[in-house]
Amino acid sequence: MECIFCKIIKREMPATIVYEDDEIIAFNDLYPKAPYHKLIVPKKHVATLNDLTAKDGAIFGNMALVAQKLAREYKIDGKGYRLIANCNKDGGQVIYHLHIHLLGGKPLRDIT
Image 1 (tube, rainbow, N blue to C red):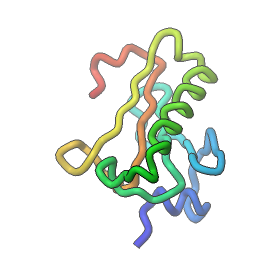
Image 2: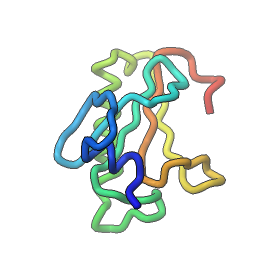
Image 3: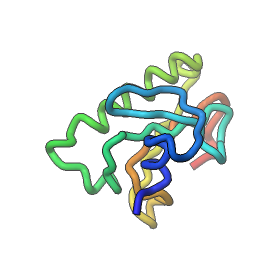
Image 4: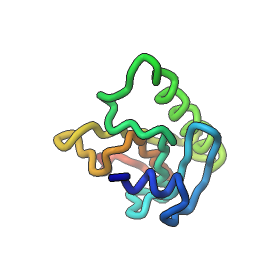
């Protein structure tokens, strides 16, 4: 069974896409915790951070570079932003497709 992110990548489910290239897609989080809350997702389905292999080594770095690019575009790079990658249930992962959250636009002391 495909996850919701796979369906968004295939355009089978709607999302407000803010970035896309051959490897990565980024879109607005449906339940934002900050004024800027974007999800940065590899198009290749990798369930968790634990499932990355040496062959996939560049994926996470490329996701971070997309986060940096978006932070600059939204002009939150100067004041600061947070990247969050949850792994498995106890780590807070809800959707089992690797992704990072980009949050910014306000002080984030109260967001974990």
